[in-house]
Amino acid sequence: MSAPTHVHSSPLMYGGIRLYAGSSCPELAKSIADHLKLPLCDREIVTYPNDNIFVKLAASVRGQDCYVIQTTSIPVHRNLMELLIMIQTLRLDSAARITAVVPYLCYTRSDKKDQPRVPITARLVADMIEVAGADRYMTFDLHADQIQGFFSIPGDVLRAFHVVIGHLEGMVKKMHKPVIVSPDLGFAKKARNYAARLDLPLAFIEKRRLTNAPTAEALTLIGDVKGRDCILIDEEISTGRTIAAAVNLIKDSGARDITVVFIHPVLPQGSADMLTGLPVKHFVTTDTIPISPEDCAKFGKRLTVISVAPLLAEVICRGNQGRSVGELFNE
Image (cartoon, rainbow, N blue to C red):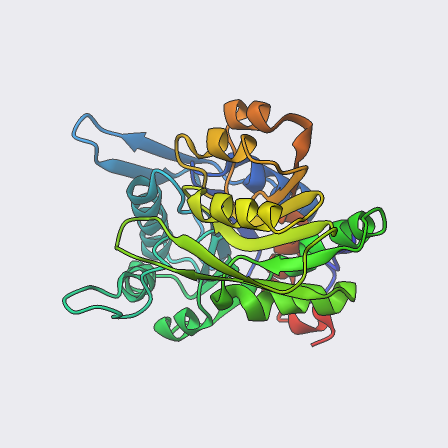
């Protein structure tokens, strides 16, 4: 997707844009501000000795259209609480509208009661964002589309597909008999969108989660990968065990080079070491979650990070002006 051109001459619906960054993704927030040619507003965030968080705005936001940019990655509870406190601070200062810009939304894998006596934590997180005072939300690639129904407020659930696809179009031209591979049947529909856009065949891995532990066993490969370059696409990588099992299964099935594409680089401690030890030629991800310099160094030139900032900036601009987001994607 090419960088959009912003039309700042359109009438504003909710006053001027005010951008506020939490502490979880400062580089992404700065990049969004740069694309919009607007400053990040000053705020003070203090953590007291008892681990309580205090937020104070440097200037009034009365009557303004405010956007809080905060991804809820590790440390999840610190970042989530900071997001909620910032939203409430803006609400109590009489902001005209508040949008929670959450590139990665935590707890989206807890989206249903699939066992007795378990919570639906994704619904709880949605409720907390609303109760804190958000009028809208923006996020990328929810684990399950039904999570949109947990919110009573409107939102923009964006697809990193539109950010990543241009890079993949360039890559497949240099590949030998490329094929898209979905690491599980749950991601198959989204993987099919990539395959259709790139005009490539699609293969699937059937897996079964055996316990509540964050592990899964890859069981069966459905499709032909022998002698082909494979693009393995997933929504997020957490521990890396699922992707590791998928990569090894594909390799054992006769695949040539493997490229791993994932939207949300959760990457808890130790996962980068596991991933970089796999027989993967190239990793492609986005900056919905910042990757530490130490982990980036482990990947080296094998890692490409594609920024979601241009798309978020355009959606913020269109939201402020009351213009369609869907028309960006011919929807």
